[in-house]
Length: 347
Image (cartoon, rainbow, N blue to C red; front, side, top):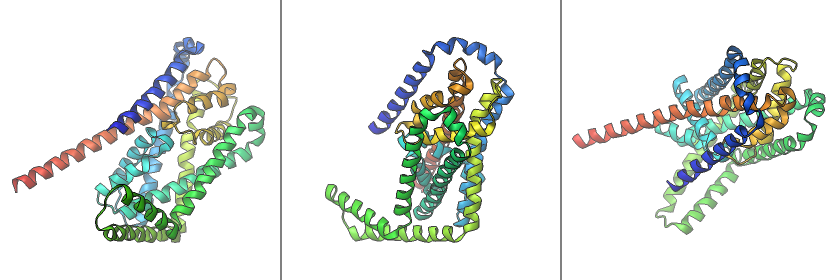
């Protein structure tokens, strides 16, 4: 309970601080005028981009689930997407998303081994594609990047480097059964020191069973290269939906001198630059990074307003919708539990 209060307290503090910085900007007085000038129909495409991101994410979960003979229909997959997004947005390094999704799948009757395999496969493909996507964008737009955002390149390179190191660590941890067993046994030995555990062999047997199921699931995934390739293309589409949101904000403000590819490329590099910042939802760093990288495109008078629109779509709108779905799912599960307890009591 204390951890939850602390986590939400830090998030609220960061959100209020960021909002205060934005609202104390001298350009805020232009917001009513800019709001009146904003094309709502073009801006709506930005919101559709966020919805497209969710839909493709759910389709990816469903595709991997089918490969492992797990029945996750589109609605269940969409629920998992919302739950994963919500907990990723409120935890540092987006670390809470996958555990929450695994917990949700286990409650729906999916084994721990298979649910872990589904999300690990999705996570690895996502990390590989987003890193390659950003590097590709940097290469094809190298001249444009050096001309406009040369001073910020150090942060982008640090982000790409840390993502690459993280990727290597994931491959080592999750594709090496022996190494994974050593990590789990080491963790279990530490747990034994701090807490008395009876029947250690029973726990070791359970863990061994989970690891074997996990390895079998990963083997099926590796063998099905066509599905992996399909998921990779779907991830590219998902990222394009997300990174192009800034372009639609740009166009909604009546600007058009920079192409969609240019804006998408810079947005991909911004994602890499702030992804290693350990704040929930990269609050603070995302806003600062957006201002540094995009002020030359939007202009000093419009960049703060554009940044606020961007964060409303990719963070606040995302957080609100995913939070509502997560809350509804929690309340429905509670209701189901109460009903089961009532039936057992009557019996």
